[in-house]
Image 1 (cartoon, helix red, strand yellow):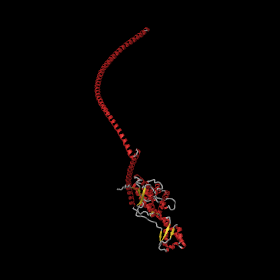
Image 2: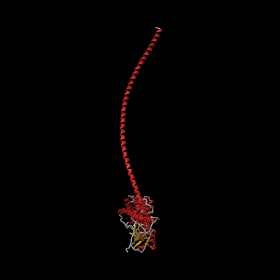
Image 3: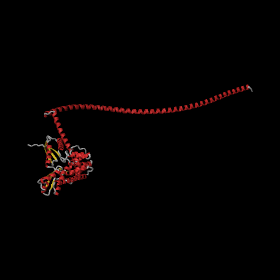
Image 4: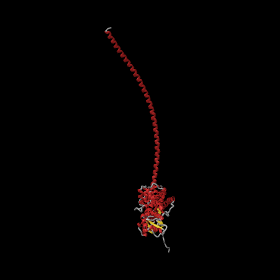
Length: 512
């Protein structure tokens, strides 16, 4: 085959290719048609199914709409029934309101008529009142202002009497309760302390075996007695007192040293200046030991510990100090015990109260050497040695020279008064007693309206009789308070003083 055969082969190949392509395209078209037909059938099926569902939903919607409509109609019917009933109730209320309004109008008309009648009656009463007032004014010859003033005075007088009665009642109840409680505390304290001593007096007399010893005490030209007085710092009085010599000194410790030394010299019999000085020095040391022991013993008896030795030593000096015949060291211990009992009953600080009671008169051991009151001197001395500040305040304030800052200070003052005021604790001179009685009566008589005054019960009570036309019941209460306050401010006394004001009204007439 040559070139022609090759060309024919190529042409045949191309024709075959073209025919295959056409056949393939035809087959593709047929497949495409079948696919389109299948999709059309599926689409028609979907449409039919959707149409059926739509019809079903439409039927359900129609049924639901029918149900809703029926429910709405039922609700409307129910609301209409309720509205009908409400209208009926409102109609009834409206009728009731109308009836009530009618009744109120009728009552208002009746009240208006009654008010008119009352107005007329009030006018008539006012006219009658004016006529009566004019008649009363004419009869009494007083104006309305005068009558009102008299009426107010009477009312004020009645009110003052009632006020005074109430005040007396309240004061009586408070006083009875306070006195009852105070009696219990004081009785408990005194019973628990139960002091067995009444008074101890430091004597300045020295007994001698015979009056011949007085000459030996004086010595040749008085050299022995002068040497003794100069070394001891005391005055020796040799008088006509039989078998006794008196030692005089303002310092109780020096007086005690001199007394002990003179007793020893009298017993020994050797009395000359050199030996006097030796004996005095020895007795000075002995007395100082006794002072220290007395201070320690007092602290032990009072149950007080922790005090500085110098404070205890100064406290021991009170053994030789007396006040109105009462030994001051025993008094201090007794006050400490009383203060402890009262503090325990009241719930206060027992230790502070005991220290305050024991040291309250500490200044009396030095007030003869240093200027100042014993309360302030004792407080300053205690402060110097680190005593508790509350105790220092109690010492300084137990005679109200400074303000009391704690309940323990008040307890110490009360215990001091109890110890000094109990029977037999102190002796008081006749002159001081008479002076206190006269002072009480003078204070009472200095007030306006006082007719008479009498001091009773050894100056423990002042009884005052007032003029009833000048002092009423309320003024009597006020007068008793004023006098009691003035007595507290101007006088010094143990315990308390009762102030009694008596107002008596007497009506006297004669049958003729």
